[in-house]
Length: 291
Image 1 (cartoon, rainbow, N blue to C red):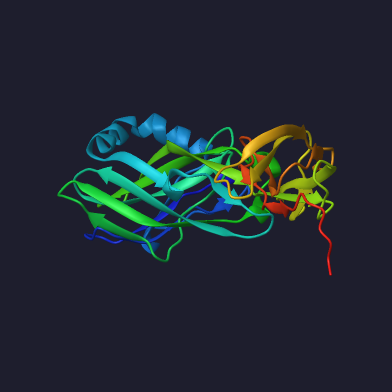
Image 2 (image 1 turned 30 degrees about the horizontal axis):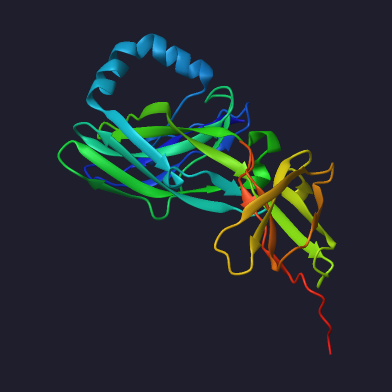
């Protein structure tokens, strides 16, 4: 897949009426006419030719317009479920005379021309002039995990397109980074309940994460997970031991029940998968006679 950035500019106003960064098949040779208010970042071959023939003009434009920042999702990782779209916010800042606005596109891959990405939504996109030469733009980007491979859970590039009044966009492929991760889930169950004080209990659970390719959740194998305990009335948890998940993501730990309290599992996370803590399971470490 190749990223194609298209920009619709509103002449003389510090706003962009529409912005999109669609992806197209590698053999897609579509182009937008300037008559429709759009310009297109060319393919790798076209970019090379443009750089070779117009380096001087591009340098002159770059000197006038500078992309200073791009923040997606407030700088926090974007965590995607197995089969649910997610919309996150963005803000970009650019400086230069005659600047209309700017907007980001996020992408992953070896290069912007061969990578895969998502661009800004048209609705809710706004730009504001901070001063005579600085413009800040805000909006949203929607990610669809159904279009992703599991291996694309990684640090993505945040590129930005800035548009001066001339209408010829200026692109910076990597202004910042944003992490895209696979949603994780974790369970815990302490048994038997209730249990006689001093007897052995078993705490089971399971660590799973989103599989974007199957649109389901699958066990996360061979991961260290902490078994934690909080005594009844206490304010914090203490790690009792660390166990590893099985090939199916299952967890099992045995401990002695000495006092009443809450048991849970806690996973620190990896580069592709966020940290997650299970819900707490309260266990009564007494011999209880039910009536």
